[in-house]
Figure 1: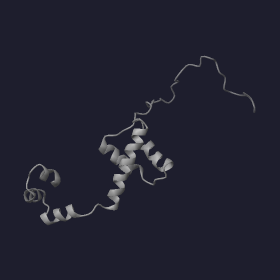
Figure 2: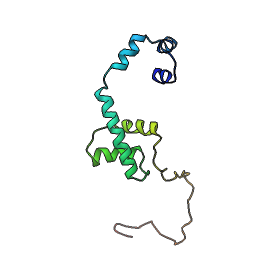
Figure 3: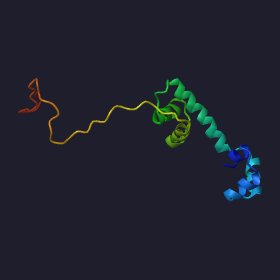
Figure 4: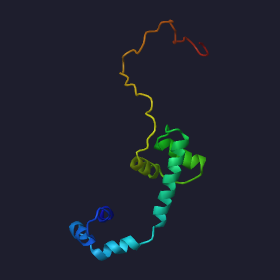
Length: 124
């Protein structure tokens, strides 16, 4: 947040004071090297984008997770795949529509008169 305000031309002292952050803490955070976790997330974000493009935009986070874990042998959770996809606005195609069935109501008439009852073993 402070980065955006400073890039917009606001002074660092004012931004830190308004957000309740010490100026020294801001500069310490700014100079800190990128962590291994952040580097891995950036790398995975690139891979996720490549898999999504390779699937012509049809894969959602579940299929991309399966492609990464089963196809490429990369261990990651499905949430770790979902987060960068949602931030980047990537998504798969919607799945098949869900049909809600009512219990006790016949869905269709038996037009071929099939008989599924049997009188003994090994019949039908």
